[in-house]
Length: 111
Image (tube, rainbow, N blue to C red; front, side, top):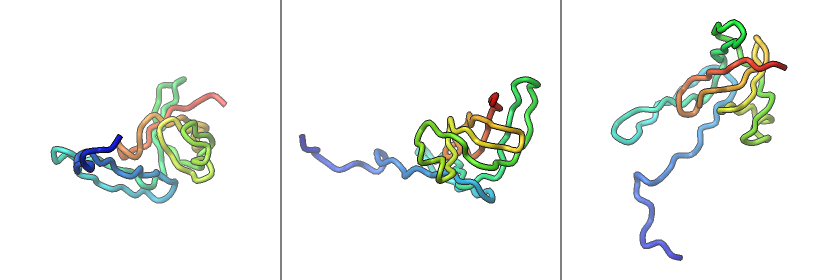
């Protein structure tokens, strides 16, 4: 099957922005309708919730321990939704989408 035309500007997707560990760096992206998305390119801290005490605290990210999306992301220290990160409070699972939301939220998991 041959396409009758090329993709239109609004049909073209963007390259994925991989959130790495480092000094915090954000990028503003203009989306359709003039809205804005905040992309987190580098993250130093995560907002970690402890389900036992229901308390949230800002915790420093040490490293990425596990990533179901791609095992290679662990070696490259890429943070995305579902990644298990090592924080100063312990192991935490990322619940936000840093490349879309511009913030890293996580929930502590039992080791």
